[in-house]
Image 1 (cartoon, rainbow, N blue to C red):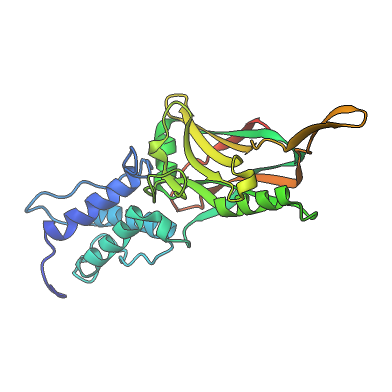
Image 2 (tube, one colour):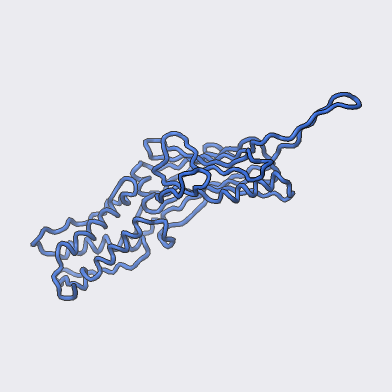
Amino acid sequence: MASGSTITYNDLSSLRDQMNTILNGTGVHGGYNQSHTVAANPATGDLIDDSYHDSLHSAAAKIANYYNITNTFTAVDAGTTIDWDHYGAVASAFNTDITTRFDSPWAYSDWDTSVQNETSETASDWNGTRTQIVKFEFATAANLNAWFAAGGELRVSASHSDSTSNQQGTSWEQLTGEMGTFTYSVRPEDSSSVDTRTRLKYSSISTSYVVHKKEIADDSDYSANYIQVSAKTENSGADILIKIELADAHVARSGSGSGYGGAWSWTGADNVPGTSTVTIASKKLTNASGSVMATNPTSTVTDSL
């Protein structure tokens, strides 16, 4: 097709329907729940008029603004002829471009989003198991789905710092480093094993805590130690609770004997030297004017480290 060709229903319908799905769809990775009116496709034989073209132009502008791409459609005034250069010449390419971004939001870093820490807590010279729970609240499950579909992410990470070169502290430095950052998003999981996966699709979170990530210490002396991340939903799917546990579960070395003065026994120190830090962050929508608007969650620490 080229300039001067007739613009047909087939040229219009696919793009219009995809923009309507992206902007107004709901459900898991179903759309952004924007309530943005996109005019219905004209019937065969109907004229493509200014109001219909303006509706498509408006939808394209909103999506392009959010994806940080160029809106390739040309606005027209009432009474102006809508020709191939205004619409048909760019429809297919634009449709492909926005579909790729909608299907794989994790592949793009230049969207209208920003990453910020929700909470960062520390524990020093600790032992046993330390647990932190953070609750992310959305107004509705539909808002939660829209936020994730638009590229929202929840990120969990940990670190440890020990300046004493103690074996136990060094083991925790290695353990937290190997865990890396674990994410909940719309992206499918990269492994079925809790030992090796680095991410999980948020729709896999159930109404009871399930361990989604577990990292075990490599040091054979401390192989009982681990970090694990679990999550659950509440409030009819509108809230997500993320739980991270640091477990120093190894048994302290001990000994006993007898000699001059009678029997004796000893138990080694069992504190983790240094400072462990747990950080939970989110990739939020900036909600700039003219862009996709999705309500960001509020976060609350319900159990402190």
